[in-house]
Image (cartoon, rainbow, N blue to C red):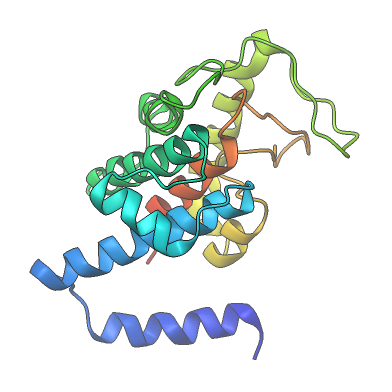
Length: 203
């Protein structure tokens, strides 16, 4: 059984016990908040353990031996998660939603550049030969990506869409095969939160 078949099989099991409500829904939501915050930050190099991540999100307590930067990465990711979950009844995300998600994630991280704003500087992707749009063209390029994505959303197998480099938001420009990388930092964590939002829209 390949990965996509396994996902479909698991979705069938989940759909049989829908809908999730009340305390059950709250427990599931909190579980995924902790798990996704931990895994997303760990991929980016954050050294907090799963248990420490849970303590930060639920009690707001800093962990000895860890930097404030790492603490605020966890805290910010939790806030971004909560915001995206609050939008669950919306049909689609707006540009303002996406930038606010980024602001929530990044605004307390020390020395973070351009919280909640498109990048105003030129950037490179280490180890890649892709030429990214100039800063003044980022807004237009991102608009083009979103337009393509909205048009083709339900024409693409969803698990493939999510697995394929977080195509909705981040470093992939489907029509022109160019990266956009619209933010100075925090692109991937916000993309993961967007993917979680999209999971609620897929039939």
